[in-house]
Length: 366
Image (cartoon, rainbow, N blue to C red; front, side, top):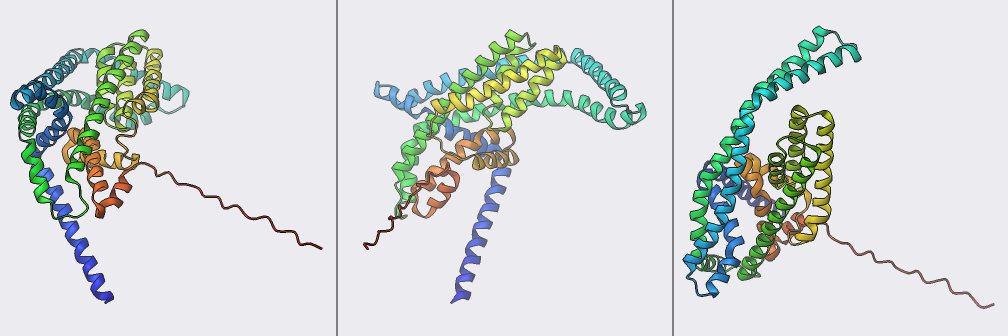
């Protein structure tokens, strides 16, 4: 009996491992098709509400979906064009920045030699190669950023088509899932669909408000302290802040380094302080007030999802990580056999502490 149970367990674990491995392989090799499709699903879930509003006004479904998509595409294209133009301007000024960086490197070498009493040969052997490699990589980083935004506009074209088709044929898709999982007991297909739409809509709305808040606040702060490329750094920081935890650290580091090279160390210090302050206000006050507990995913699931998304689909995968994990959690919460996975992905569980009052010992009568 025990051997049969162990055999069934090993077979089930092997099947799940094979399915998981094949899914990862498909996601990697079908990236060009699945990546815009994933963005299309997320945007379609976010745009269902305005599309239904236009449909109630008598506008045909196809035209209503097209209007919503055109408005969203114009806004996103404007942001991408602005960032790409700013990065191109930054690339034109790169020779000046390179000269300032070389001056800073020489000052750092002199500081190490005189203050830390390290010989010049030791500094050249250890520090100079690392700094020179970093300077050689900088143009490649800028070129990769330009390429990323160019590829994003290419992906946006296919995302537009996928989103439009999903909005138009959403009833067919919902009926397909309803018929496919109709045999599974304890599953409310319409509840899963409504909860998924609710979570994604509120999540994207919260992120848009967060981007506006972070970009506006950082722009004002950077302009006050006199940082060069203040608006560019603020917008990039706001977009990178969409990647949980890792995005803020990378954006703050980039802002401080660029400000240190283009301005004084005093300005760079203030840029770092402003970045940390805005992040604390955003993560502890603004975002909880806007999103609340609608996307209750714990930090472990978020960081792990971002890491796996970056390994599979790169930077776009990092942005898609949280919405995908949120959809998975909604599905797990509604399926009885997967409730434990929903608990694992969810936030901290509030435990009730039950205090047992001990009865006082009765006094014996004399």
